Length: 175
Image (cartoon, rainbow, N blue to C red; front, side):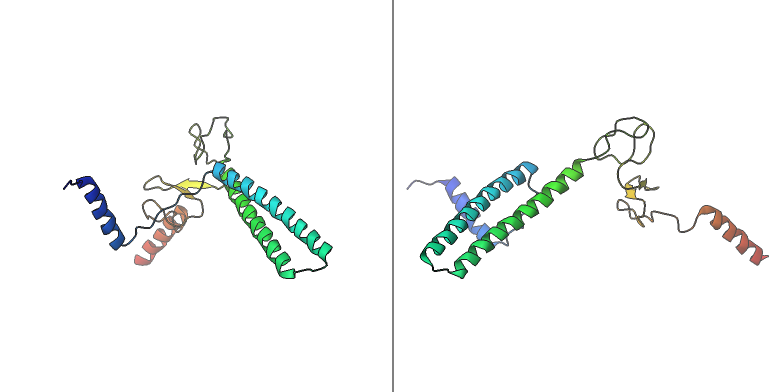
C-alpha cells in the first residue's frame, strides 16, 4: 500500500475547514481599469438587448400578436443594465476626484498627493482645512472635536485670553 502524506494532509485540512466557521473575506475596491472594462462589457450587452427588443417588437407587429410581458421583461433588463452603468460611472468619478489634488502650493512648492501640509511653507493644502493634533501631530479636519490618532481633545474649549480672564476673576473672589 502506497501512502501519500501530502494528500492526506490536504484532505484533513479540507475536512477541518468545512467544520470551522468561514472567515469573512475582505474585498478591496476594484481598480479603475476593472471598472472601465466592466462598463464596456455592460454597454455592449445593453446595445445587444436593445437590438433584440427592437427585433422582438417588429416580429410581434408583423404577426399582430403583442405579448406585453415579454416586452416588459426586456425593458427591465435594459433598465437594470443602465443602473449598473450609472453605479460604475459614480465609482469612476469618485476615483478620479480622489486622485485630484493640488500639484503646487501657493508658495510654488510641489505638493505630493495625499499631503495635508506644504513641506516648504507649512500651509494646509487640499479642499478641506486641516490642522494638526497638538499631542501626536496627526492631521485632523478643522472642525474635529477629538483626535483620531490619540483620542485627545482636538481644540481648546475656550481661547487662552478668556481662560486668563476667568482665572483672574476667580482669584478676586478668593480674596
